[in-house]
Each structure stands twice: as structure tokens, then as C-alpha cells.
Length: 427
Ligand SMILES: O=C(O)C1=C[C@@H](OP(=O)(O)O)[C@@H](O)[C@H](O)C1
Ligand SMILES: C=C(OP(=O)(O)O)C(=O)O
Image (cartoon, rainbow, N blue to C red; front, side):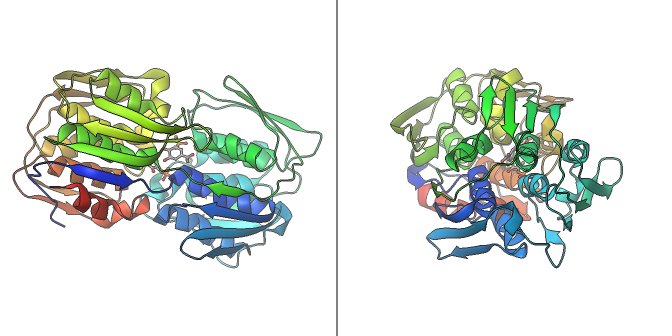
């Protein structure tokens, strides 16, 4: 498609759609709990639809009336062997978290995904899940999809230090640990603290978990009870408007219902370090959401590294664009995990923005962005990566030449109403 270019200003407000990570987990917890779970404001992006389809294939009743999603859970023991292989689409979160659930179920399940997901390493979950007793086989030494998981009722507890900072691995192990014996306690130690939605939701569903720094203890034999869940807006989606509002001239954008869980708000720290005009109002510490207002700003470069990285990992593509519009260098380090997302987001971000006139040097664990550069037209491809697509669409707003984006439908993975929201803001 041809993208919107040469935009004079972004003005108005957007109600941010539901958080993808929390939406996935609301379905998963609803399915393994006992009783009815009601979910408000769920994200109906393709990744979350993959999670819903997987549980329906395992016999879970999930009703979506377009407003509320209702899940009838009958505990882990209520899940049935799917008749066909599960299609996980593009979703790493669905694949890895559901593997942790399947590890403790006494049947065999096959999982496959699209081209992008089929290149992403699953050994980070298969290794520890095998240590707990699951019988799993995948392709090549990295255990790529398709995966074949033979679960067992006899999962044993694990004492495991994560070799990567990953909420998906942590969550898979928490789901498996819940299914071990009542007297067992699993100990999971994070490399860096990552998003804690699984821990929060486990407590909300009446479960037990203790977290002290990077150490997590999970007792086995837990019985969860269905709940009412309201999903806050996704800060990873809001990030595109935060950046757009800062870099498009004459802009003022108000974002409602943005999730502010502190394990996710690294982008706010970066905007503040770069000198961006951003204000938070209507902070609701129970719903963990707030309203955000951004205005066009003069920005300067910064350094992004260490324990900040997991708090903004999915925002790094759009932060790279932000940095192209800041004076001086922005250095991103310790972000090698970007290489195993929907694309190699170090190489693909640098290639796409450089093709539009940016000056970015990719490195082994991040990139150096030399600002400030004007952006011009180009012909680009999402390569199936939704966040690359949205980053290019925001970059195009600054170009006065045509920008063409192939495979733009990838954006439906996490943000189906992205172009509608853009049309409403662009002046
Ligand atoms: O747990 C989650 O919901 C997610 C964890 C992160 O992945 P990793 O666990 O691979 O870092 C993130 O990139 C992904 O978009 C969602
Ligand atoms: C990496 C992402 O998602 P997933 O790992 O679930 O595919 C993402 O949404 O940027």
C-alpha cells in the first residue's frame, strides 16, 4: 500500500486498544481456572485470536459477543487433546506460553506457525520443560516449529536460572510449575526483570506465587478460580502515537487508557531522557492505566541499555525512528533479543530507516543512531513484522515523497485499527 506522507500535524485523541500480553493471558488463565472468566476490552488482534483458537481446539467454550469475551474453564484437567495440529500463526507468546500448559497434559499436541514464527528458537522453552518431564521434539537443534509436545501428569518441579531475559520463558515455566505435585515448589530466577503480567494474573485468579527481586517461587497443585478481567490499553501500541506526536510538526496527541505496569514503561523513561514533552494524567493505580499527552519536541540522543531493555523491548523499532529525529547519537546496547523477534529487528530496522535517509549503524546487540536526519521516500516491506510496518508508517508521515509498504496486513497481528486511528489524527 501507499502510506500517508507529508502530514502537517497530528491532533486529537486515541483510545488505545487492549494490551496483547494481558489479552493472551486472560484467555489462558480463563481456560485453566474453574468457572467463568469474563474479559472486557480484550485485543482482537490476530495473535490473540490464535490463542483463542488453540483453546477452543482443546474443548474450551469461549464466547465473544463483540464486547465481552466469556471463557468457561474446567481446570487443567478440562483441556482435551486437539483433533488437529494447533496453528499459532505469527505469535511467539501463544506458542511459548501454551507449551508450558501442554507440558503437564497427558496427551500429544502438534503446533505450527507462519514463516516468521517457524524461524524463532523454541529451545529456550523446550530445554527447561524437558527437564520437568515433558517429551518434546522440534526441528533442528534450536527446536524450531513444528513442535510435538507429549505432556505428562507427572511433571516435576524445576530450579532454573533463565539464560535470557524473557517473560515468555518465565511464563511457560510458571504454567508448567502450577501442574507439579502439591508438595513441590519450583524456583525460577530471571536474568533481568521482565513483564510480570503472568505473576499478577495468577494472584488475581486466586493462585500463589512469591516474587523477591529476580527470584520467583511457584508451588504446584494449584486450583484457580475464574475472574472478571479488564484489559488496559497496550503501551506497545500507544508507543507509535507517542513517537509520532513528538516528531511530526505542530502535533498534540492525547492517548486514553494506556497501560502503565512499571515493567513495561521504559519508553516513558527514554522520552524523558531525550527531552520530549510528555504528561500523564488520570492515573489509575488499580487499573494500571493513565492518559498521556505528547507534543512536538526538540529531542537529543541518549543511551538505552541494561535492565531498561526488557522494559521497552518491543518499542525499540519505533524508538529507533524517534532517535533519527533527535540531535546527536542514540546508542542501544544489550538488545540482542531483537534478533529473534518476528524479524531480526536490528538488521531490519536499520535497513528500513537507512533506506529512507537515516544514518544507523547496526551492532551485535543494538544500534547507533546518528541524528538528526531528514527522511525521504522508499519502497519497503514489513517482512511479516507488524512493528516494522507501523514504524515505517509513522516514518512516512515525515517524508514528502511516496513511501510504499508491502505486506502491510502484518499490522493486524497486534493493532487492527492502526490505520483508522492514523486517519483520525492526521491533519
Ligand atoms: O510475554 C509476553 O507477552 C511477551 C514477551 C516478550 O517476548 P520475550 O519473552 O521473548 O522477551 C515480548 O517481546 C512479546 O511481544 C510479548
Ligand atoms: C515479539 C512480539 O510478539 P510475539 O513474541 O508474541 O510474537 C511483538 O509483539 O513484538
